Amino acid sequence: MSSLAASVEAIVRAAGSHVPLLLARVEERLAELASGHGPVLAEHAGETIAAGGKRLRPLLVLLTAGPAAAQESDLVAAAAAVELVHSATLVHDDVLDAAQLRRGLPTVWAHGGRALAIATGDLLFSRAFSELAATGSLAAVRALSRAGSALAEGELLQREDAWNADVAVARYLYRCELKTARLFEAACELGALAAAAPGATVSSLGAFGRGIGLAFQLLDDVLDVSAPASSTGKQRGADLLDGTVTLPLILARERDPTLAAMDLREIDRPERAAEVCERIEATGALADATARAIAIVAEAKAEVASLALEDGQRLALDLVADSVVDREN
Image 1: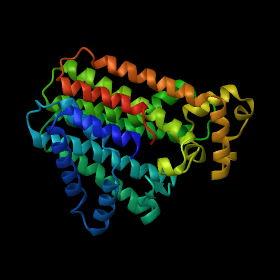
Image 2: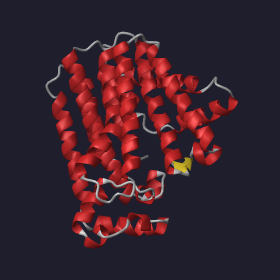
Image 3: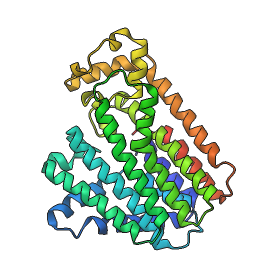
Image 4: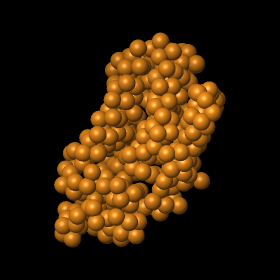
């Protein structure tokens, strides 16, 4: 079991007995929503959902709602919608990156081709917003729509920045905010909205989610350099191979003149990517990127420190924040 999976179990225990039951309902609803659209699409959408992950985003919906959330079915719908959007972006990302593996399994793109993968991602997106709209919460739909728009903008920026070794740290962080942090933010906002929390509380919990989402992406980019494929389920240095410039490379180029002079298009095979990963790690860039992520998590925890939350709810949110930087994959 990975450290993150173990952390999620501890988070669920801390949150109270209602959370495991709600998570089980979310899983059931995800399976229902992925099916019923013809055997081909249903198969691939179902496989994408079943491949899962740690379900951090739907878990955040449930945790920020707390035990006082009014309508259980609406809360489950919100949690499922967030995960569907996340799954859809992964399917589309794999098309853009021509990725063969996702979490150690063949991607929809690798298995069924470009057209099927795009249709599968589109189906997941449409089911997400249909599910959330059925709750009748315009505020919730707006929150998830903002996140969806940010995801698209972030992807466009990443395509624009491909193989551009001169990407600034500020632009990289903004791209991470759009592509990853905004969906974490929306998850926390949806939970708070389901609990009818005051506007200030919704904003604070959203800022918490945005912070841990940003840190999550920074650590993902560190793991892309440091972790073997057996740990992450994807090729080490996958970002280098598809021209994605991340914080470890940006920092390493400032310290290693040979990396600074390198044409990123020279990184054209897995062995070359692994070699560059070793050189990035030797500069100390990974430690500095990790330290930045830890600082962002501390700021996120401070954002909710003064909120009037249930004890179990507060502990669970703190554990989520800590788990982001205490993980192997």
